[in-house]
Length: 162
Ligand code: FES
Image (cartoon, rainbow, N blue to C red):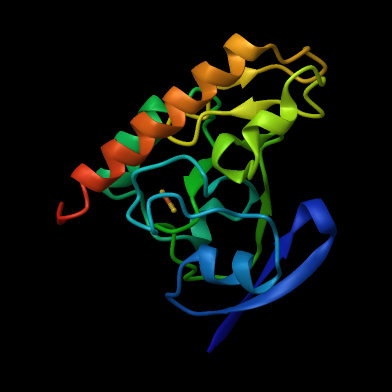
């Protein structure tokens, strides 16, 4: 049996098989949801807000709780789409604003331009560059360093089992 989940940002509905995670539905609908950690509950790129229907999702697991604790934009209704499984009807979700650093293909191309939206840290969700801010060469090198550190961290944790 499938459950209907509403995606608030694009005002669409999607059917998700009971007990499947929200990420499968988000991807199917081509929302721009990254899976920086590969769906292991270790990053912020699938962080979402549950506008309605929190009780229709599986409870938070330990991993999810720990990751949400470091996400700076975490609220009472935050979940990780790769960890939250749909068990009932009436779930309405919303995505946090901004874009993740890992979505930017060519970082160098941003030099001298203004950020069109907040650029977020893929693990903590922290705002690295605020929307409208002019991006300097030194900021670019910082962003590249951060990207390298994240890759290293996730590679190191690849064998981690729940
Ligand atoms: S994809 Fe990384 S926590 Fe969900």
